[in-house]
Length: 64
Image 1: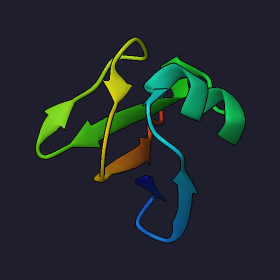
Image 2: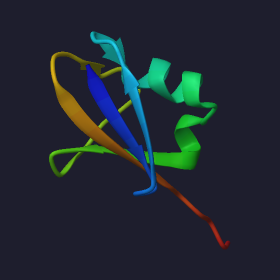
Image 3: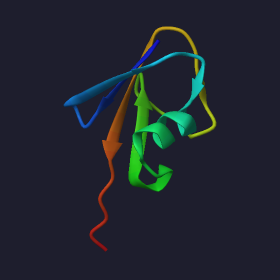
Image 4: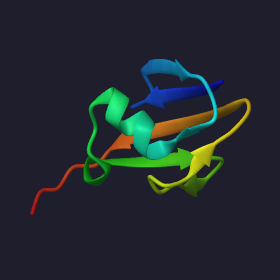
């Protein structure tokens, strides 16, 4: 099971194994809109999460 914390307020759980891309799709995010972090590492959408893990999704804002 992976716990997904979005912007430090909402928490979701998904069965593993699951790819970061699939998690983003289920939550309605585009990869260019967010940073996905696990244990101080940035994850790309092709990374597969296995076992008991916690990841954080942070929104990315552009002002340019």
